[in-house]
Length: 213
Ligand code: SF4
Ligand code: SF4
Image (tube, rainbow, N blue to C red; front, side):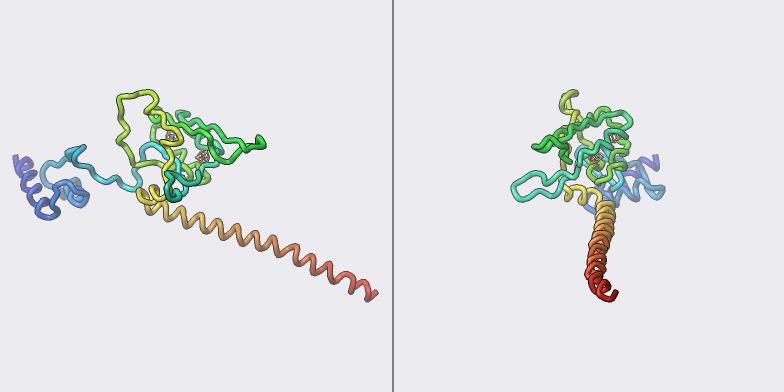
């Protein structure tokens, strides 16, 4: 009975602090051992924000779209690693082709059966291009149990700004990693360009040396 009464007293206390009973700050305390009374969320009217590490089904990252467009350039190169590591094998990819018939490094089609997906996140962990990420959007239920649950490339694609919004810390760490890799690549390129210049210098000195003999 004390627990029951405390629920209402706690509601009043938190309402006076934040205006809403069920905000994130209130829940951090009310669902901890410090909490008093019983507490729940009146979903779907009340929703809590998801923690950054929360993962539901995957989505594909694209560049931020230019004005007037929904997506930018695909980050996915269609390498197929995610499809290989996916335990329930629920990813299907069709690689694009260039006009000369050679493989194009982007998917023409990309499907994920979200009913089979077990939200393990292995696809996102293994992708070498940071092109597939785990989404926070969990409201995917529908009465159509066939096509609505097979997400195609259009349904899966979301811009980089969305990833930065739902997972800012990880997105910033990945960005820093990419910049470091770019810097290392540029340094290597500069060193490789230096090497032929040295041998040209040597070559220019050859006739002079020859004149000495
Ligand atoms: S591992 Fe990444 S780049 Fe390769 S196919 Fe999957 S999403 Fe695309
Ligand atoms: S989260 Fe796991 S099960 Fe779902 S598509 Fe990725 S690898 Fe497959």
